[in-house]
Length: 277
Image (cartoon, rainbow, N blue to C red; front, side):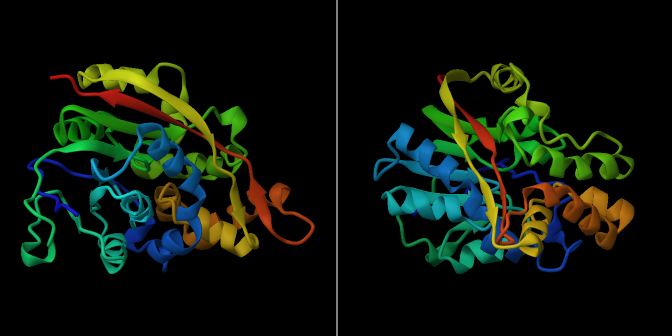
């Protein structure tokens, strides 16, 4: 696996629960929520034939499950994750993950020369909560080799995502803290991702919609999983964890099944782009 040494590359993740607003948020992501996006990761890797010839950088890789799945296919993988707790969980999985793309690993790499650019850069989880999606895409572009590919992922149309009603708690309670709308679906509208690509000088090269059901053993796990996404951080700062968790429980009740488990059908969209310059 190659180490991450990408000057100027950052993984922007403002206002996330890994920073301590909800105790255990980072571990809840790794143990509960992260697996919900496995269908998305696998669909992208299959489409792009990720394998031994792939050098993959994950921006905002969180605790690293997407990187592990790519490594299982033989890819050289590395990541950037600014949140300390998430980064430590990724490193505990044996992954090479830096805080800002410029951290040296010395003898830990054991995988040849460090890379300053990669054949594939993925942005699976950053865009829905990013303060500046333009800056995120610019960072991804700068870390991509000429002829390489960038993958951006966003929520699908809200009418096809049952979690939209649950995410509305973040929208209603978060804006007073951030000074801007908390809008996980802002980039789901037609043409929004394409506009980001055009601004970065990237050429769209296909994409797709992937079903990613959110399934939890019980209501408590569902609340913890949703909180761990980081999208509720501003809501927690504004109203307190107890009140936000209570509203989440209420929003989740329609999706509780007879056995106590919780399931929400969701669709995610990914777009592949090529760097030709």
